[in-house]
Length: 137
Image (cartoon, rainbow, N blue to C red; front, side, top):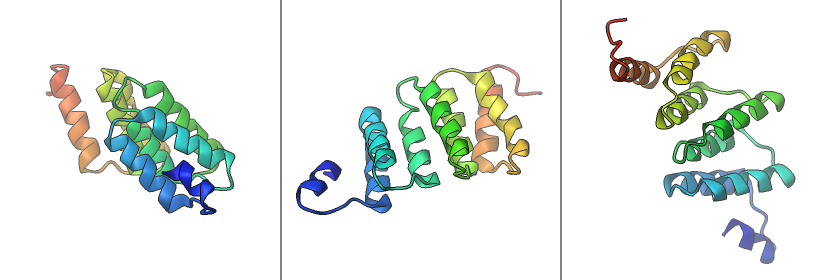
């Protein structure tokens, strides 16, 4: 649909593209989500935190945690401010890929980025510790 907008002289904006990326993530269509993100990047649209978070969310389905890390790195290079949602999404990508130590390292990175963990962050960290049999730590 986003691609068809060009054919009828409609220009997609961030809201349309972000909604499309989110829909792709929910439908587990990571390749389409990343294609839309790339289309935004190559067009006149500025990637924002919502775009990147949605694209990262699509990477939690298929062991694509390296792509989620790349999106985060791209956010920093574009001076796009990651939020607690960004870090929680990255943490979820690691969990889905059984990268438990990396997921826990995200918890430690929050303080370097002047963010406080929220209930989702704590819940994920506790679940990881339980999964690893280290819930007493």
